[in-house]
Amino acid sequence: MRILIVEDEPDILNLLAFNLENSGFEVIKAEDGYKALEKVRRESPDLVLLDLMLPKMDGLSVCRRIKENPGTRHLPVLMLTAKGEEADKITGLELGADDYVTKPFSPRELILRIKAVLRRAKPARKEATEWKHKGVYINFETYEFRINGEKEELTATEFRLIKELIDNQGRPLTREHLLSKVWGYEFDGYARTVDTHVRRLRKKMGPCAELIETVRGIGYRMN
Ligand code: CA
Image (cartoon, rainbow, N blue to C red; front, top):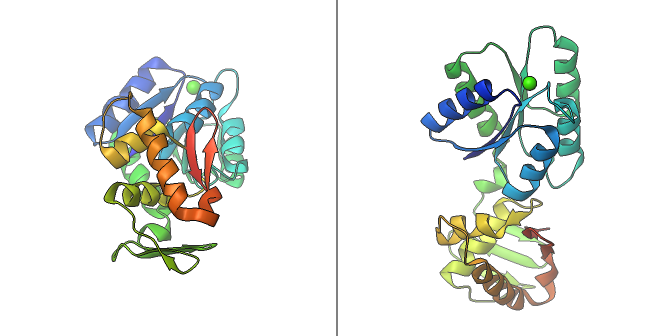
């Protein structure tokens, strides 16, 4: 699980990163609101840990942007608030933030909150064995794949690729993300591999090919 920490105070940022990494999370950092939104778009985190007092764009504005965008609306946001920010906390929850932790917090409590939010946010479809959308039918247990009722054969890689896109439906995924999830590469450098496989997958999807959208400068998204 990948957590984006948005915090401008380096000491707190490092402390948070240290604790999250120790608990097995992958950490991405942003020091202001603009960088936060950019990293949400480019790095597809699983959760945003969002300080409210930030330079340039405050945390509430960041939260509003995340929750207004259909592509990121389901991304869980856990606010970090200070004493005296009660009103902001409520505004944040009204904007769609999933929970909050008040500073000073114990690392243990923070980790528990993060895990609880992630558990709640887990879309039900991740547990589903089937996915039906427009003319596409896919069964994740039997590996059956049909387009408008016609059976198509997918390779194991194409299957993992479409599953990753479906699990993140509506979210743009970077080529790097797909490489690491589908192929297991830990580094960037084979972005064309992704393009080649998406092209083949789209061909097999025929009239439904446009469900996989190319997101310019980023990668792909299942619509
Ligand atoms: Ca701050």
